[in-house]
Amino acid sequence: MAVFQLQRTVPLPLDEAWRRLTTWSRHGEVVPLTRVTVRTPPPTGVGTRVVARTGFGPLAFDDPMDVTVWQPPRDDSPGVCRLEKRGRVVMGWAEIEVRRGPESRALVTWREDIRLRFLPPVCDTLLARAGRGVFGRAVNGLLRRG
View 1 (cartoon, rainbow, N blue to C red):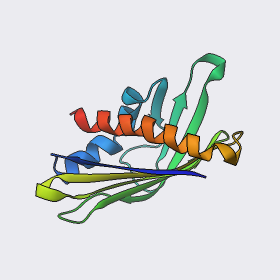
View 2: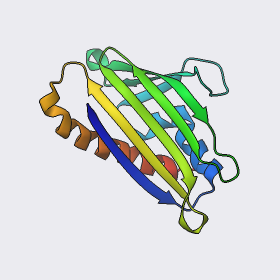
View 3: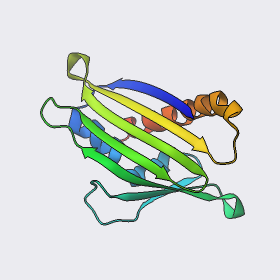
View 4: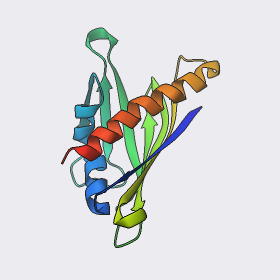
């Protein structure tokens, strides 16, 4: 298991930070070599299927994910979303939490347990570090773009 967590505090209302992080097609704009499609009709909720296709040509693979928790923020209640990764190559889960932070800013927490089927456990530390870097840049990009 390669588990990592990152946090960002941004000058956005909770609902706007949530929208920017959970508009799934936008993830493909900030993750290199990745295209994201939603395979179920809107709106997003429990049961929504999201597929990230990463790579190019014969080196590409799918990362199918199902939304298993969907609680958008309301008033001062935090928003929480959990995605279960169901792929042949990428497994694990991701959780996105958006809550009220200092000075009415949004505090975003992204937690992830990522496993690659053919990577031995001795590589977990390196995988977690790489995941923190890739997803940290992705979260920054998503939160910056309107």
